[in-house]
Image (tube, rainbow, N blue to C red; front, top):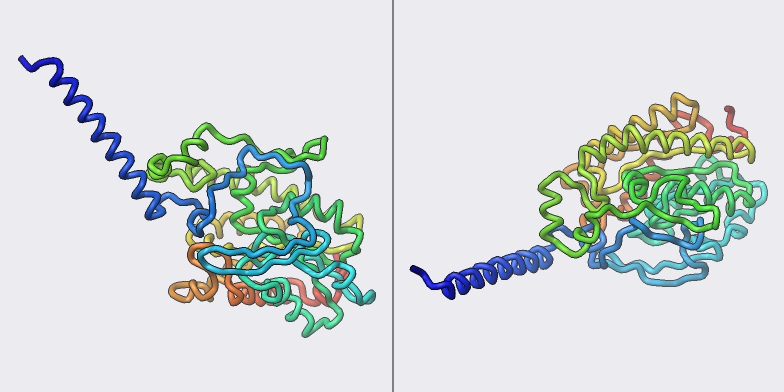
Amino acid sequence: MIPTTVYRQALRYFVFIIIFTLVAIELLLRIFGIGDIRLESVGKDYYSYYGKKFNSWYWVNSPHLTYTDKNSDYTIEVKTNSLGHREREPEEVYATKAGIRIIALGDSFTEGMGTEQDSTYVRYLENKVRTIAPEVDFYNAGTSGSDPFFCYVLLRDKLLKYQPDIVIQTINGSDYTDFVLRGGFERFKADSTTVFHNAPWLEPFFHYCYIFRVILALNGYTGDILQKRDDFLRNCETIINPQFIALADSFLMLASRNGFKMLFVAHPAYGDFMLREAERIQQQLTTVLSAKGHCVVNIWQPMNDVMKGDNLHRYGYEQDLHFTSLGYQLMAETIFEEVEKRYPGFWKAGANFPD
């Protein structure tokens, strides 16, 4: 008969081996970045938008801010104006009173993360449009981390005083994950605060445990939104796209009341090329918007015709997943060409473009 002390020693040894193995696996996963979210993959700390509360409705940078945006892919100096945008002052942009005024709304792909201020898609598009309409002036109101709901409120409350003739709103794959994390108009509370969706119970475990992240990934969960991939894709079609369509209608009503034209641009984020369903979902959105009479272009296909295979990495950063200046130039050129194809004379006509 084996003594009880031997059983206890064996149990303690077994528990030690299990704990040691789990700790070793956790350390190895962290060292090799297996399970990193995008921010961690470029050397930044974990951050989740779930459950966050902000004392404002407006998603903009601090005014008159100068800082260095640095990660493993690039180092860029960023300067903001009095509105918190990476742009000249609106009065300077629109100094030519007879010019056609265009405001570009969007997230980091509009702000131009990963490139200098003069190499954003907005600047490239402005230069392209000026070849046929020299009197056009673009204001870049893009802000990293923003989304179409934040853009609508910013336009409605802060930017209409600059009397735009055309407003461009971009939409990409990150806007769908933003909706999961933040919600739609319900995020804007009556006390002027903004409150995002509560975190699911999985989030604290996901935050601190890489083994848990790998287990979730093996079970079909996608990234830090903590939804199964199939559920997320289904929700994009049945919940999020209808919300975006309703938001586009709100933009259109705002445009009608204030005498400007809306242009919606569906474009791939660099990481979207790895998720082909994203193209189908955005195509569904743009098809409905077009059928409802919205001015909309989808630049997925023309960009995909160029950004494929080994060529892909010339146009974007593999870790950061933003475009290089070459990618932003391609984005601008495809927007220009698709608008000219679908709405000839749009850039010249400004607010006089026919309904």
